[in-house]
Image 1 (cartoon, rainbow, N blue to C red):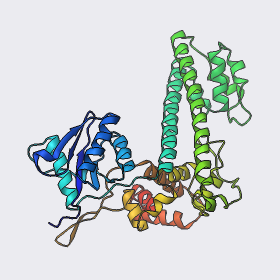
Image 2 (image 1 turned 90 degrees about the horizontal axis):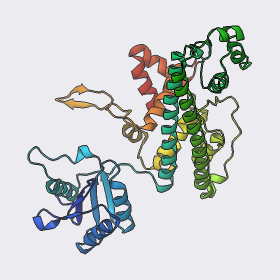
Image 3 (image 1 turned 90 degrees about the vertical axis):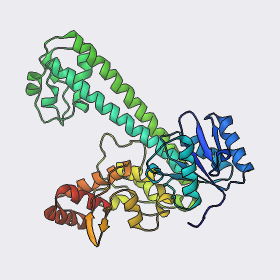
Amino acid sequence: MEVINPQAAGIDIGSRSHWVAVGQTEQDVREFGVYNQDLFGMADWLKERNIKTVAMESTGTYWQNLFAVLISRGFHVILCNGKFTKNIKGKKSDVMDCQWIQKLHTLGLLSSSFLPDEQTEQLRTYCRHRSNLIHSAASTSKKMQKYLRLINLRLDVVVKDICGLTGLLIIRAICDGESDPLKLAALRHGNCRKSEDEIALALQSNGRKDYLFALQQELETCDHLQQKIEQCDVEIEKKLAQIIDSDQDKREHFIDPKPHKRINKNTPKNIDLNLKSYQMFKGTDFLAIEGMSYSTVLALMSEVGFDGIKRFKTAKHFASWLRLAPNNKVSGGKVLSSKIPKGSNRLKIALRNAANAIGNLKESTPLRDFFQRINFRKVRVSAVSATARN
């Protein structure tokens, strides 16, 4: 086969050491540690061997520091998916792995994975951390509901969300020692559907102190997580402002508010995502699309960004990267399989949630009609994937 990259190296990433190959002989392989001085020593050794391009396998988060060092030294670095660097069956070792990666890269058989720019990557870190905090808060809410049920305080029956206005007021009063059902029911918010008498009937405790202590602990955890989410929102707002202020073309765009768009409790409260997204994508109003929520737009901004979307040649390439396009397997002129590939990412999940919301719309819209046609011919799962791809 023709040599495409003659000055290429292959790196097998490890948790405690990295194996580097610049050729196929034993003298062309060296092992380096994972400390900073080891990474810079690796870059110096590659410079001495006149290496121009480097390929490495994406393994967990161990590759990130090495990737940053090599990029800063002027190397062309390719981060490859592990399924593209699998060796043939037989004996496996770190030396053979790095040499195999080097051989594939020399022949030009490896393609780089998508990596966002530095600003988008930092925004993605904040948004993913915020999402993890929300999941932790949801887990805490389930535990609070469990302990309330064990105390025989059936707040979940009379209140839609125990972490809403009425639910939290009652839970805080219970943790402060209040046990009178009538006084607890008097904390009911005016928008609550159930009357005070119905709520009072559900708040007759059995007096278990151990469950009450556990409930108090979970309430403190919930308050702590909400405080962390608010702090994370502040950092996200700062990063969005920094990205937009660095581009004159983005700053000059303006759009009117959308008061009809629903803002749920997990939406950042201190960020005008309607304006920020309009500026980020230089005049493209994604929230005008039916089914798109603030969380979906935030996922789009943080996972790929404006510059990231332009790196895909066509919309079909983007859909394939999201694993929303059918993976056609053809042999002998016959389609063996056309299933959606396995695997998911946060943007794919956000787009599928938006597609599912489109399927629940009552009014007729182009995307909603498309969803119903696919749903009629196949099943709802296929309709969700097809609508998310569109």
